[in-house]
Each structure stands twice: as C-alpha cells, then as structure tokens.
Image (cartoon, rainbow, N blue to C red; front, side):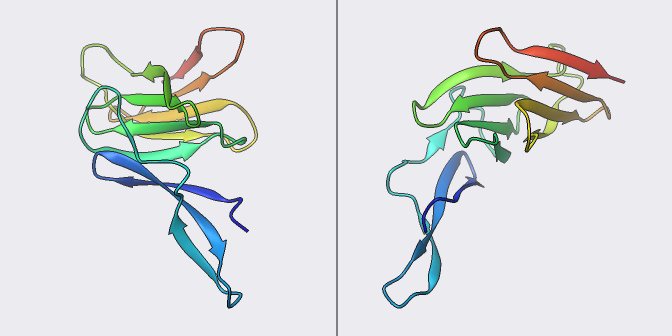
Length: 130
C-alpha cells in the first residue's frame, strides 16, 4: 500500500524504499520517488546502518567515522550529531531508535551503550552505561 518506508544504507547515502502494489496485485519493493537519497551532512563517508523513529519522522544513521547523525527526513534537516567520545577512542558502530519511544540506543567499539532521548522541547539528553 506504500505506507511502509524503508531506509537502506547504500555506501555514502540512504535510499528510501516503499512497498507498492502492482496492477496485477503483487507487492514490489520500489524506490520512493518522493524522497531523494539522503547523504551525511558531514560527508563522513560510508553509512553503516540507519533506523527510523516510531513515527517515521526522524532517522538516525551510524557513520563509518564513529559518529551518528539524526535527521528530520521530510525537511532533510540535520537535528544533532551523537558521539561516544571526542577523543576518537570509542566510535559508534550501531544506532537504533527504540520502536516505542524517542530513545536512540548507540553501541560503541569499547562496548559502551549510550541511550539518548530526542525531544522536541529540549536539547538531546544522554544516559551512559558502562
């Protein structure tokens, strides 16, 4: 029906796909023509993975340089950049939106997990667990 949007990391950009029903009644996965590919604002290179929030409004992408970027997809606006360490000793290797909240869970190369909360009224808040 076209309502499910999928974000796929393709090298240095995210491509958006959706499920479309053909005239013959089959469902096919097609590129979403309403959303052009999205690249990292920092030009950080390879995108490791991406995840939508529960509303499909925001997207987090884990980058090959050890950071994660959060975007408003429709506005194509960078909301914030997440990183575990400014020293470069612990890079983010995965980033997921929790499916029922506005929490972003990131895991680093040092084994740390960080939970960040994306809110509309406050800057991003972070809880760190070692």
